Length: 280
Image 1 (cartoon, one colour):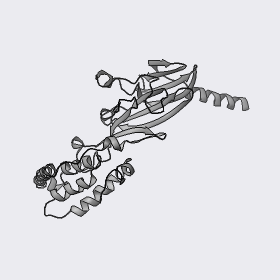
Image 2 (cartoon, helix red, strand yellow):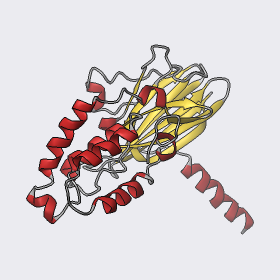
Image 3 (tube, helix red, strand yellow):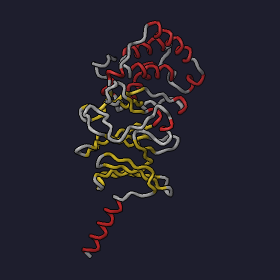
Image 4 (cartoon, one colour):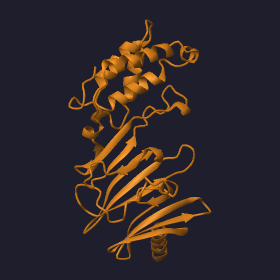
């Protein structure tokens, strides 16, 4: 009986570590190799990383692509795959980037970043949600790639799906994790003239029938506020709200709800710190 249970345990371990489906892609760098598989029966896939022929990492449950791209996005000239072994952080170690996505209309994307040098290490797992808004870019020309992505905290907040708006976030690898690059995200504040032009256009939208019956404030207004907040201009965003809101109630309730939703952002602590901007 003891040997039977041991055999079952060994069998389960082998099965859990065994890739399944058809080999779709394989790349090699020094003594590392990565393989992407697809199971056509279950419409799911997996990938494994090997070092000197021995598996050091395995993950399944999604579709996967190599180099930070998907089969669809690699057709776009701007989406050049990241080469296996290319250093993408200031650590200057060779890296591997694998993209996982769930497909479907509301598909979610995850970036897996690994160090594949003298030591093997999973550097990061970044949940980026919708792939179309995320891309690794060399913004500084130094090979230290940033992930340009979006914050989907307000994606369906008081708007239909077709009107979803998500501010841009730039992430960089720092102190062992990816964090917002506030220096690159910050832009100069708009002029007072521009602010007043926006406010005038938003005031007219407050009278829209669908807004009166359903939405607390025009989405265009608070979406512009988000763009200001995420570029280091929170105080200007609140000023835009003051200029835009007509002589009617509901303002304080909106501010409370807006702040509550903003506080759920995974980047909230970074974008609201005083060194980046001042708010109310």
